[in-house]
Image (tube, rainbow, N blue to C red; front, side, top):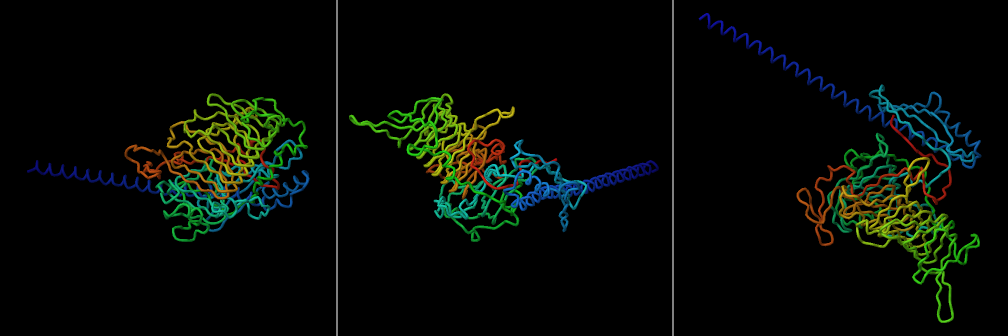
Length: 612
């Protein structure tokens, strides 16, 4: 009996120990959970505070630029010394202790300080000044963790067209103009000037400018009817890590939810109707999750490019060349070929037509620059010009002071192959003015050129790169900058090709006073530069696209009486796998090609910003 009691006491003691141990474990777990919950809440609060502080810092930079812009007009036309004095006076409020601004309602505050003011050039007649600015943003939730942005702002004379500040934009270049240079105004293609349509998983790295409405959709179009295919909403990223990209929006932001006719949709001018949802106040809905830009509903002062005004710099003819010394009249062969030479001056080509004993020199003729190296000071062609090379090695064609083509300009062998070794290899330098249409097809071209086109532009089955040069000890890749009065179509680039293949590049900035439309649905367009137009429509999907069944994980859509296969998981794919990706190229501003249009007036331009 005693032994039994001892056993019971031992068991009771063990149970007590076990109970105490369990209580201890539960207590420790509870305290750990509480600590993690508190820590998680604290970390969430810190993240929210950091986001708010970042927003305040960016608001400070924007306030500084708006303040300077609003005070620039009286400075136009001043002599350099007086301009310098007025700029210093304007910047006085940001020097010393700087400028502080506090927002009510728990938004936070920012503190602006000018760090330095420098001349942009050693030339004393150059007005532009570079102002280095520090903007500290503070959250109302935690004022001990400021966000700091250091920015460099240029104040002074305009250097390049405003459009080149953006990766993507839509603008009405004919607003307020009555000079007859807007021939397309009122046509179906440009109804709704200043509207930008982003259909499907378009990817943009850089800032956006939209003068009118922005319309997005999570589907791309595979044909011009109602054949919409599932994709993702567009994604907007900044080229500067840690800085949110900006969307300058003049009107409203809409999501297009209907799958109605594509052509009717893009021709629409009003969107407050069935099938469209206005989301301006909650604009992140219109973009892929985590890739919405910062909305700025204040359009900057904007100056259009007067394309036909550039003609005077390049035009001359057999009847009008008195302003040019030593014009060379050079005879072409019967098929229009001009002999390859690298010492041409100012050239007027002609073809000699003879019948019996009578001959006539015909300047209104088509000309070919074929499979050779050419260097001109200037060249003026009164007909069409075709530039071709060969598929084995690059041929160089240089126009030191410009090329004028009265008719059409065709570059390349017009191949319809998607295989780059089948394209003519060319290097083209110098400014070009085309009175007709421009066609680049079957060409692998390295450019350092500005091209002005009065007609339409078509780029198919091509690769566009930049000529590489040494500038101040660094290798810089130049670019093509294209200003077109007519529509621009870019298509059939890298058709059905995957991102892990070597893709044909498109390094250039494309500006149109007409309609600008691009497809990255079957094609795979990777643009390094920018796109700007009177009305811009971009269509894209993400990931691989196949014309044969690739296996599970894909869905099909009909195109040209065949099935085309698309990824099902496009919303989960990163922006880098977009089949239409536009990445802003800052070299367009730092090292622009020769022949950029002259622009007038003063400006405030953000040329650099970084998170400290």
